[in-house]
Image (cartoon, rainbow, N blue to C red; front, side, top):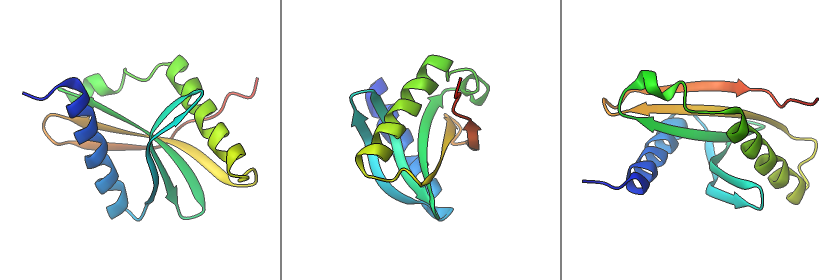
Length: 117
């Protein structure tokens, strides 16, 4: 039986392979910053993509698991990466990959926007 951590790593690897087949290239996995971690940091052509990977037993449960607080953490982590690497003029977005026990993969492109208020 796999631990939660092991299931998470497997889900992230599955998501990475799925996105690479779609033409994405990997920048980093489990990218850590002072603000938090990005599961997958990838490039989709000229766009830097922070990918949050969620695994749940049932696909329907995956849709409700990304809260505003977690989105803000991922936003801050990506903005840190962009600033640290002098990529301030780069396009970026936030994607979510949802996986379920039945090996279903749902890719939500541009899942949310940065709240600039």
